[in-house]
Length: 605
Image (cartoon, rainbow, N blue to C red):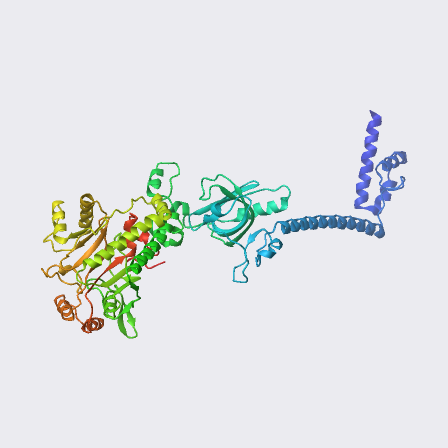
């Protein structure tokens, strides 16, 4: 125990000397000299245990400047090596990233020639098409694929991206043309081309619905129930975006395509379908018209014009184009839009009426026009517009206005039959969303006279006053209901309207001037057409103008003057295109039958 105590004391003394040496090296010898000689040997022995120098018989010595410099240089060299290694590792990582990004980067594609196609990337956004070249790509119509092509054929298609689903190494998309022709295209990861597959999948994930895309691929046999092309699908090989749609649209086309019944039935579900208001649809009408039924309505509107022309050309009519800027009103009792015309006031034509009649005076015995009509009427109803398309006709007659009604009836029969046979596909799509039945009509004109109509309305318990006022909407519907029950037709004519409620150019009834040789035509109990035998006697026209308190000035004077130079007796009619389409299809609002409707609250888009 004594020995261990002495050893501990020696160690403690040694440590103490080292501490003092570190703070006062110049006096360390004195301290050593003060140590008893009997303790020196153990102390030296102890110092050897702790000494870092080469010699065991001396304490750690101060390093020279050269040694310090060498140690510092060695330390800095190690640090520099470490930094260099770190920088090289970072540079390699960055280089690998750039190489990887370069391999995955999807560049824009400038497609100039089908013959050079193999030199172009297989995916990417197409550079802006600016008529640089005719590429020669043989684009096909989706509607023709099943009838013209077979499995194994390669085709190019352009259309809208209707929908897309990408999951893992597979993807499915639907391409849409003409709003309702669709085909499914698919892509699956290719083990033999992992980089190309990865790039294709990556690009497909960036696509947005409703974008315009070009795709090329090989047709394969399939069973696809959700597309119009059901027996074929496209194995995708190339895809380019021609015009990218925004990722978020005002509403989805599929929502715009749902029937009111379907939306209503979903309201009790956990995720009901959204109701799209009329204003939202009209504010974004170009999207609304992509819905198959709405798009088909516009095609039916076009078809009505085509069939109208066909029927009248077959009857020897000539198409004319009349002014829409005129000096005065063309329709008494109808609101008119005015505009400055080089310091004078001009009107937007309320109809081509005066010019149709002057065409008869020009020896154009049978004329028609399809053109815009403007009415400044503050009517916010489901069947009124401030601008619509007029289907107008005028013809010389031999004896009686029934000659004109027979031509009109034959013309409408041609329209109705033509729509149901030649536009059956469009009608089928419309009726999926907006339910309706084909319009029923008689083989010969169904013509009611005003007194008969008044008796029908009385029997129905409707207030008709003195029987000399114009029909209300409720009166028209009630009359249409009875006519359908009594005569089995949705399409009929009503003549002999009271003169007081007809325009100044209407020929009075020869037996009772309180009534007139005028008529309206109805579909499903609502008026689509107004017409009459026109008053071709200039003195009688002036007399009627005076009775109605209309000043015969400006454009009316030239109109009357054309009669003074000789004119054939004539009759005609003005038909509202949008109203015909709206009622034929059983729609709930005329705005659905107008591409970009104008009403008192809407002048855009």
